[in-house]
Image 1 (cartoon, rainbow, N blue to C red):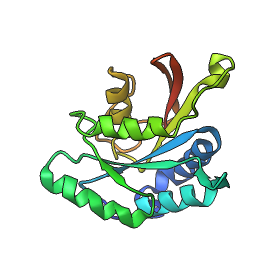
Image 2: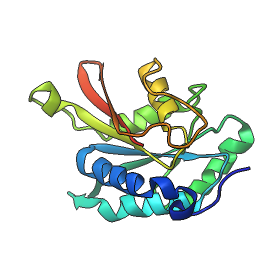
Image 3: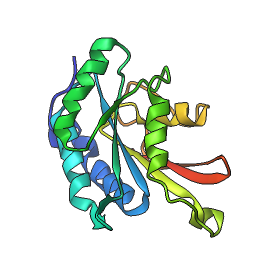
Length: 185
């Protein structure tokens, strides 16, 4: 059974933390990845997080910044992948149907993330690292996605909502570019 309760009810114990993490993500990240759960479908919590992100984006040079990319996780079956299209209703653009556990669709998702990065940066690693925040409601699969991207078990994965209690910054380097992946609570 999936929780369809609004964020303020279904995740009451985490509401302040979730809002705070969305604020941190939108202020610090160059790109935000909103992770939602294909098996749950579009929930009130997803709508609330999407609205929080949209309200905090700013227009720069005709583009909304930071860009928000929608990852529909747990799309392990053809039916779940087709249901991922329902997430267009969040108004966050094209939903990328993925399976963080199996790695399905993560290549296309990463290509989309990288497409939003600046061409080149010339400062120190901490200053030049491109920051990517992974956000979403509890238990959507954010930590599983982080682990799949970096190729090791960096974040604890559990079916217990709220396992990730603080934002986890994971520095990685791909093709001589430094990145910091931010797995939010």
